[in-house]
Length: 240
Image (cartoon, rainbow, N blue to C red; front, side, top):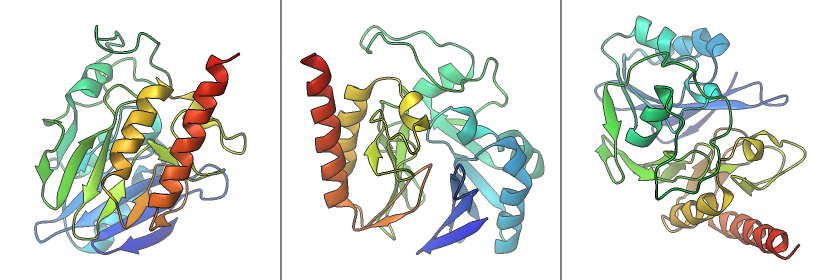
């Protein structure tokens, strides 16, 4: 496991060369907020990193419901029963096994490693612009219908989940990078992901961290380039 620190935020990076899986510890006076929870076999490593802070885990915030982002939640909830689990109301339905689409959503199947039955119950549901400690929740659908990013305001770091990737080439969710194709393969609707990427870019973060790949400093120009690339890809497909 590698670590990167950005103000009160620590990025935990598991398997950085093979298949990087990232999660995030944000420290405040009350304890630790964890954003995303990787896979079950990494639960003990996450637990050890939390213990090393000397503070309790108080919250688990999830960007989305794919198995490589929620896997350690049951273990951590057992270790920290008072920790409150938050997920978007939209992805909470998917967590409970409802993979149907709402009338206003793009009618393409939800992709990726989705739970067949809920492995845990959320304690609260997250809505756009919710303030959670130093964190603002930002709805960013596309990778999943209820995907969320989180802006940590002290460091102005955007935790983007799978709205972007930086492993295998920097890209918006849904833009295939053959060196690391998995986020694109698991993306529900690429045009929606592009719209969300523009929304996230408008926040002008000082740093960007993602579910898969290294952190980026002063990322706005790279975000713009990735959005342009994603839009051109959509145009080329429509002209075939």
